[in-house]
Image (cartoon, rainbow, N blue to C red; front, side, top):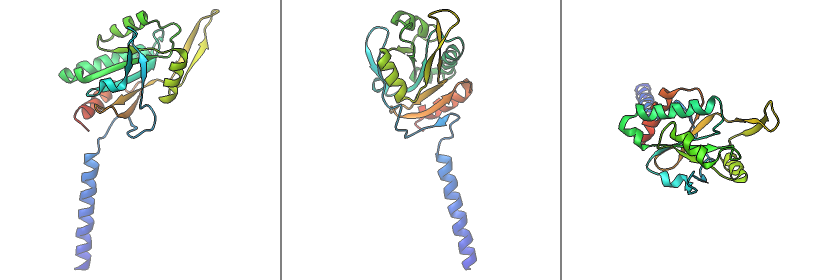
Length: 196
């Protein structure tokens, strides 16, 4: 009798722990919920208006640090994010893409606006002074560094190739690596849009 009761208690505990696991969302990206970084962002848009993460509450926000002359990672990321919005259908209107330049020296407001509009008219480009850019990148744990080009004065920029995803409450939730593909991001954004 004691053994039977113990077995029942064990089975009940296992079934409860299974329920707990089922209620935890299974993201494809890296779950960084509760991180003490990537919490704030305040830079200017191409119109010179200061923008912050707080104004996008109610939407899932995807933040990507890059530069307009990036040959591969940046345009690929932006194309994928635009495709994700389309795959989400009407829910895509609740997704906000933010492109933060790590090259304020060359990325003028006009160039940034044209760049993001090329992918999705709803995306917002953000730019700061070199000091603001460095501070924002540091807060997001984003690496970037100039790499000299083949001619005098030319350069490219090595940078972290991933995006940060914020839930509709404005909390940082995920880091998604470049190359994961749009399907994984669609999956994760659906979970966040559903309040997971």
